[in-house]
Length: 341
Ligand code: 13P
Image 1: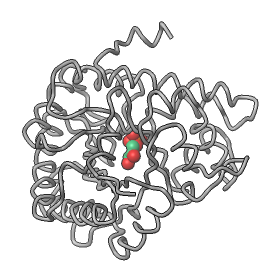
Image 2: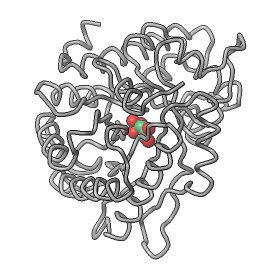
Image 3: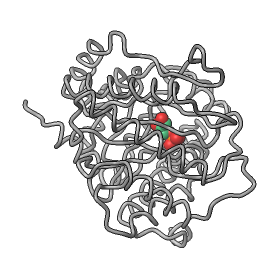
């Protein structure tokens, strides 16, 4: 089979569809399950992911790809079908989180570096054999007084570039995710400061991707939107978020990149959808879509509550958010759509 990276990347950003980030690590999904008083076991994690991937309307019409965690890529549904196979059968691409998380960066108090490069080539080969055709690596950039530093921005950017090159060598499309946090430890910055830092980070990342000889037509960028910090008194309007985000992306992301899939980062479900739709109301050099975790799953988790009898309610909640975001990819969503549904 000779699959081109460019074709996989295009499928991931197909019109009206986006990516479901269901790659919570075991410790992160435990936090989500704690909120609904559900014990996190291999089986409950499997049941939850199976609920998502068997939501047929959502998966076939609005989801282009799913990011999985290592455990999930190896799990089977109750009837024995591998979960990755269910995703493929729905017409979506299975993907895999390959970073090993962010740890303190020595010498840079308050800043992190993402680990996972050692041995990555061998892991990517195995993931490809297991059916994954794209991967994700998340770098986190925190903003506080005097942060981020150039040292931390550069170290994270170079790691992203090395990861991306390794993925492409393995026939896997890298999702390149430099996340400027809106909910870091301080998070009192305004949108103007987020604008400045996001510009700096993306400019650095594309310089490093070039230096690492990464084929830009075979990547998907996963950035934050330009928003004020969670604890900032002055929040930007949806129009300001859309305008600032597009300004930064146009200044830093070459048109060779097929698509940009935003993270939700702690935005409310509806705002994450509204912002995306506003940006898609104009002609752009790349596809703009979603790669949401929390903003696609929060309502579903709540409706399901870990109870078998609520499975259909959970799927309805997930399908609703997927459909709203699918509309947003086409610039056709307005908050009034929430009520109509
Ligand atoms: P959120 O949309 O919840 O930020 O998660 C997306 C993701 O994959 C973060 O790495």
